[in-house]
Amino acid sequence: MRYIGIFAIAPLLLGAGHYLIWAKLVRDTALAPAWARVSKFGIVALYGLLLSAFFSVRLLPRSASAPLAWLGFTWLGVFFFLVVSLGVTSVLQLMALRSSRGDGPVDPERRQAFARIFGGIAAATGLGMAGAGVVSVISDVAVSRVRVALDKFSKARPNYRIVQITDVHVGPTIGRAFVEKVVATINALEPDAVAITGDLVDGSVDDLREHVAPLANIRAKDGVFFVTGNHEYYSGADAWIAHLRELGIRVLRNERVRVGGEHGIDIAGIDDVSSRGSVRGHGADIDTALAGRDPARPVVLLAHQPKAIERAAQLGVDLQLSGHTHGGQLFPWNFLVRLQQPFVAGLHALERAQIYVSRGTGYWGPPMRVGAPAEITEIEIVARS
Image (cartoon, rainbow, N blue to C red; front, side, top):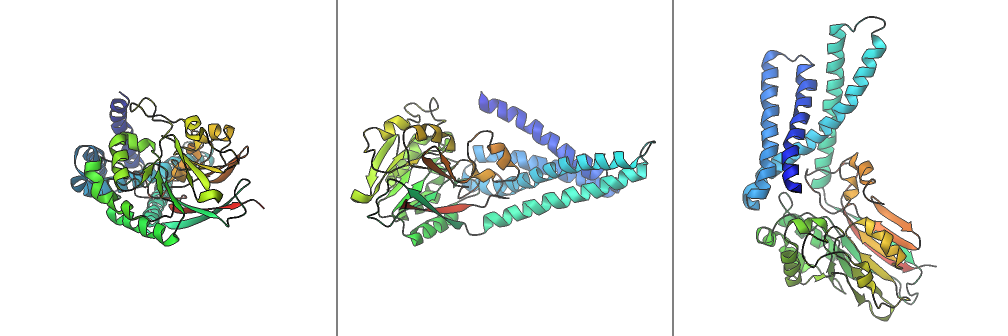
């Protein structure tokens, strides 16, 4: 029922946004009739392209839907920034009109001039931000290096290095070539362990098998560990868990492993917090994951959503690695994410626990990132001095 509601309301909202673009950039600016007709047709065509992209990725195999997805989701990003920019400039335009009209009505020519000025500003801002966002995602993913000092980590060992990737979203617009680059970057870091903290895929095993195959080539001394994110539950979680195990990846489902020998750490992992009730036998259970552990040994919890830190801190988790937020991905979403998660990005502390929230390695939806660059994270755990 939830998806029926989304499919029903999304075309209306998108249609309203496209109407706003036409009204502000075509009608109010009084374009020449020929340009106005071309612009109107183009906006209607882009609306149709966007709807076609949404439906194609759900109804067609990736090989058939990928070109349409690239075009449609790129326009989705441009559309988003145009709507946001037009919303802001509309307020500024109204303020400017009110301050300039004096005691009488606003002169029509002045109204049209303001419409063109503020419409131009909105168009330039929206297109500029979208362009910068595309450049960000086609650039190589940078490595973020984070040092975390833990009280319980043994001074007999210089460090323990975990490379974290998360929110790769292999699917309609992210494929094998991107995964190969990520794997090469990971292997060059020669980590002790690799953590994949959910939302690895957007699609079925049958559709994406070829594109995730390079993950089998990841090399880490103590192994590669994975926990589910919410998107795995849209894509066949059980099938993906089985396939990742075939690739040599250890899936942690409310369980814990000891790594690094006597002076190492425990790595625990839980199902995504949204999974309970969506698939039989799934559901986050931090208590079970930590049961029977040595409390003197540091434990790192892999949990897709940052909100798991509240219970993790109560149970004595030393460090939690999470993703899910994408760091907001597209400004100003970073402000809205704060309403749903306790932390958006970076290293934070809650009571005696620490949490690192990655901005994500891929992207979701529009192939753009603005204000939240993608990352592959090298976590260096050291003893607190």
